[in-house]
Length: 306
Image (cartoon, rainbow, N blue to C red; front, side, top):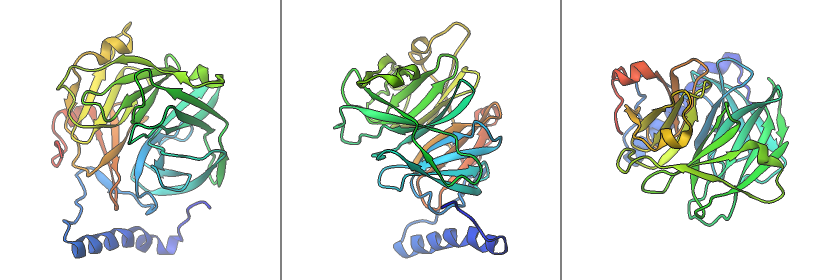
């Protein structure tokens, strides 16, 4: 059912999950979570393992989120301040380990792509990306319209980050557990293939230029910027005119100060150019927003490699 809040009780509904989490943390002896500068708590308390974020293709200022493995098959609609706007059930397939979200426009249609690409133990011979048409306001459920099953040329990979290059219609993916992240590409036009499609390896950045396991990435709408999130850092590559991703990703990225968020596993570039949002799995979970220029200038006082 869609998430709703009685307006008369909204202040209480928004505060009590955070107060409860603080009390439980105190009883367990854990430090109380601190809200980073520039962040808001996520209002929907069911977003306990937020692993994927994506901007709404059709509704400015809105986002979509998804939990990872072991959670109910639901999409969560929210705004950039973390306010809950609804829940949508996803039907039509078993979601094994959903770790990421992306969006794609094709023929005037807006699609959300659900990345069932998690593989902690490197046992899956193939993984799958499911496409659903973007749900409308108040819509309670949505069915999977098509699926793209893929494998990696160098064996199973645990993938928690993916994004669509709107220029080419390619889906880019990044491995999590390799000492140096590995980037891959698969064309979304291959969705009609009868057998799993083998992704193409693109590049790895120089050893040591990216620190920590890669958990999320996104590509700007103009195709110029790729931003990668890891457990200990945040990184930006810029693509010049005429460059392809193998050229770009083979060079060292620019390190951006990362917000101090425990288990940060979700990142999305806002529809507002230069604006990035990051969220974590911890409950209560913060949703942090910053800009490239502000981040690079160190405007986030509590940022850094946490």
